[in-house]
Length: 55
Image 1 (cartoon, helix red, strand yellow):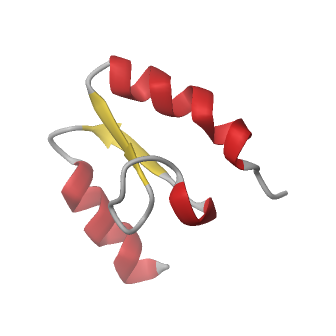
Image 2: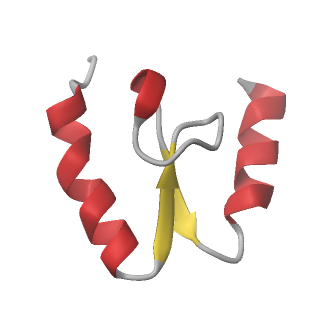
């Protein structure tokens, strides 16, 4: 199923308020492009690299 931007807005706020990062797979803040990755701030760049190699 596809998600709309408003489906991903609340999780973005929760993750950011907890000190994490929530970006598109391109690394732009927020769920742009219809995709998103969320993690703690320390691992986020590594996570994006892993995901972008595979998807």
